[in-house]
Image (cartoon, rainbow, N blue to C red; front, top):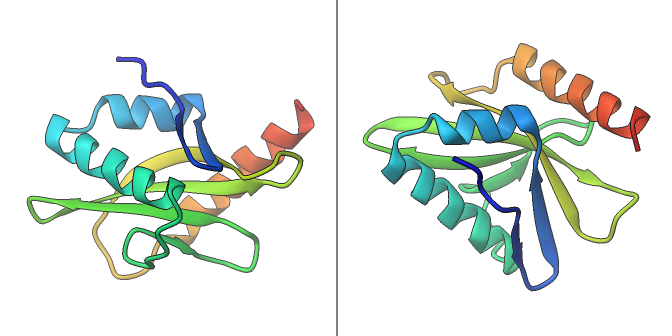
Length: 117
């Protein structure tokens, strides 16, 4: 199921292939909740419960909870574009902290993204 990039007001979210694949495989209601939260961020809602910076390296996390499951979509701001957030990949979160391996994976995707631009 292909999703269009989310654009509202002045923030745009681009979903890279791995992020899109994760989203496509989420339960429908969880996917709707995640897109709702992304939409809130796009219109300027600032809430650490739905979007927050994780590390000094510039990785950010979209969050959605549905039926006691926590869904995460890691991302970064594309500093070459005006107000563009690039979603790298997603995962189900089972612990308080975001696993360092997931952050490292997002950083690797970000580095590859910049090499191809």
